Length: 278
Image (cartoon, rainbow, N blue to C red):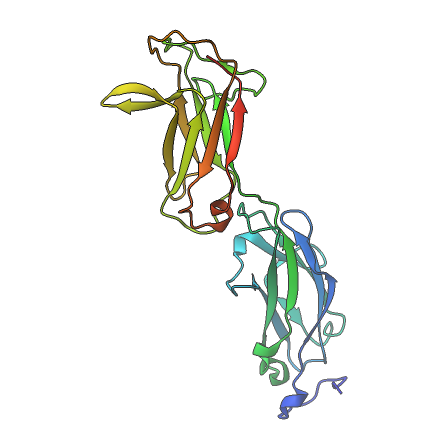
């Protein structure tokens, strides 16, 4: 049984003491709901014991980014370690684990394991620093990978879906606009490029061919590493062909399969219909 008071360090491995954990909540939500547990020692230490909680991804074992996790004590103060001694070893403290928003789609949820490193002059605790108990947390992710399209006017101000954008054929003044293609989250894996393919039911995408603006119905664009949005110019160029006015144009977007981030590589075609008066 664990000693009730401080005694000389023991040699028998089975007598080594440890950190004791009890769960308060093993579930968290990014930027809103926190996980928490109670931490204390199994016996009174002869010398102060410092416990360092270390959060890491359960699957990979990689350290959880410091900027995305905060540990707090019962008073709400941020902590990086817990000091336990003869006066508080049995009462211990509550440790709250707060997860910030990382802007990365990690799936519906992911696991985080909080391990505990012990530092003390009391060999009963310090000798077993690598065998201290862990606390497992399930974190619900609040991010969802998506590629979105937004209609912009010629000055790049957003255009409401119900308002529409009037593109007059052959008129370059006040009748041009942009479609902004954006990634909703930061890719979970680095990639060299991400290719997107856009198609339209009318030739509205503007490409420069030998210095001359040409309207096409489809085009491919590339996102470079770190790039989150691209503004694609659109217009209703003069083609000397008598055509009926169109109340709307359907724009379809698809993500290339060369993307290394799985949450983007698995995206199906994304479609967006905007009211473009041509």
